Image (tube, rainbow, N blue to C red):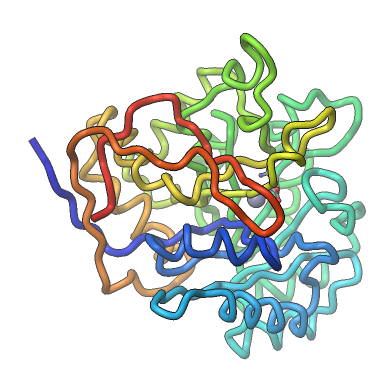
Length: 345
Ligand code: NCD
Ligand code: ZN
């Protein structure tokens, strides 16, 4: 029986750090275990220009506790007014690692996102040319499309046409939640990867709705039926390098979650690696955990795997705090509703 597991230090390829007091509180939760993370730009106002990204990166580095090492990989929020030249120079200077596409209105702070995809054609073509990846929130926003179908419809109506129109573009389908997403990634010849969150490997839609409405399991894309969760588990634990970890750890304070119209997002930074080790062990795939958390992401992004390592060890169940405190109020940690036996030592 494996009791310890040493992996190259993991990275998180989709993370929300927010700003101000929340940034200060959540950043150490990620930096404790992860070397790098792709930082989501959906602040208010969003991180649109290279100057915004440079200023946000400085605020992140200022908030990092002295003894911790962490590299924020910055992204730009794509709008219909994004300037191809600004995007190009932000990439050339090494400031940004990806550009993020939010369909307008799809999720938290996405109002400045894209409505008319023809208006971002120039930027996407430039990105294909310079090899800058596009991270995609893959849900349509049409009122008549059922929320549980929005990812599958997005693939057909938006993503596939967009990829065909811009053949060299490298695309990450972020936080996929369906077997349709898994199948689409597998069917693509090249240039397509997908992140999978920790929570979507653990919960299905019953966790949100059965026995009372549970706001801390509500995130976007919303968790789907059990068959979809199983497809995600299969993809994550398969060793296929097109699938890698993006936690989408998305902190919102409790008053903003536990209310009549609660925000979407699960906060998983603190216990993600314990949960993933448990999940991979349950599926007989502990030997593939390193691929998912440490190797496949850098390979997609053309970055080196971290030289540093972390060690997980198995023992009595580990407990984590129910909440973390921030200067803006408490944030509830994702509860996987199962004992966790692996801790990062
Ligand atoms: C994210 C957030 O809160 O910023 N919420 C979420 O449910 N995942 C936005 C996002 O990634 O969709
Ligand atoms: Zn997100």
